[in-house]
Image (cartoon, rainbow, N blue to C red; front, side):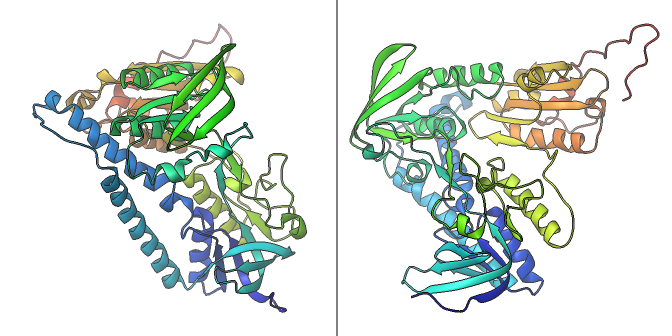
Amino acid sequence: MTASKPEEYDLLMLGSGAAGKLLAWTFGSKGMKVAAIERKYVGGSCPNIACLPSKNIIRGAKVASFFRRSEEFGITKDHWKIDMSAVRARKRKMVEGLVEMHLDKYKQSRAELIMGSGRFIGPKTIEVTSADGSVRVLNGKNVVINTGTRATIDPTPGLREAKPLTHVEALELDRVPEHLLVLGGGFVGLELSQAMRRFGSRVTVIDRNSRLAHGEDEDISAALRELFKDEGIDVATNTRINRVEGKSGESVKLHANRDGSDVILEGSHLLVAAGRTPNTEGIGLDIAGVQTTDRGYVKVNERLQTTAPDVWAAGDCAGSPHFTHISENDFQIIRDNILGGNRVTTGRQVPFCMFTDPEFARIGLSETQAKEQRIPYRLAKVPLNAVLRARTLSETRGFLKALIDTGSDRILGFSAFSVEAGEILAVVQVAMLAGLPYTALRDAIITHPTMVEGLIALFSNVSPAPVPASGAKAAPA
């Protein structure tokens, strides 16, 4: 039964992901009446089923790889085995601690957390149905949509019937798959493919594109392909699935076309990691006056305002780059705009890191993007064995590279396929934020031996800026 009179709030969040929970805690702490409506996961996907749990599992796989390499470090090994139930238990313990931390923050901020399914029944008005069937109707002066995305399952015949794993179920496995078939050569697919291989599974990655991580530079794709080859992971690119037989967890058969030829790929488990679908259906957006794009994402402007007055959207569902740190920046933008500011998404940096081993991290322009946009650049690139810390770690696979503006010494982009790539990237990002020339890092005194010290070797490899023709003025630095 629906309540007749809405409960009034200063701010409502439909979804408690990174942006939603931070808005709830921030405005709740200011004494405003705030509520976050969450269907299932306290704190959203990141601490429960995505970023942090996956990195927990990946760390376990890294430890397993050390066992396999133990003689390299002068340590003999006898019989050892992978206990996936213990791997899962470690992950679950971490998640439990994160959920407790989130609940404590709700309590401290006095923001209300309402567990239930929410949908708009009018402008800025949400009906919430709890698990026990009780119904509440809430109205907010401001409302933020933060419902996230889910793994896309294409309408390939037999795929949905095969009950494939997504990243959610893959992180809950209690035994090592005998042969895992992975649909998708993007971030999620690559991270989990390597982890499951290191736990002992046979793994085959299938991608419809011509190379892994096809949106990145070719040297990145080639390095990933070589890494997977060395780790015994099979890769099938230019492969499109036509039909699926069987059931994941038992036996799966993929009927596909590869480079124009029909092929059959067989395995015990199937993992789908080929894109994301926004969680915007069935929540009454049309009733609220909130329009969506042709791909189902909430339509927003540069201030993250939707097409409905005083209704905002943040994170994946708003089409923002699918990273938790971007959703956190969405929180900052919406927070400031609700308070009367004028903050926008235009021109913001989007750093990212893929947690394969080695990691791949990038900020700014890739070579591919620079060429597409016809932006001239100077390229600096060094192999990772030029970084002495990498040698001490016996982790010399990979490289560092940077793009430098030809008319100045500004850093246009930085990429690292390297151990600790994400940490190295942060240093370059700060330099880019500060508008520093690459020479500031080249000439810096950096602690030896550290991975960041590799930036000295990298930026010492930058070629001089071209000398302007006679009579021409040099571009300003």
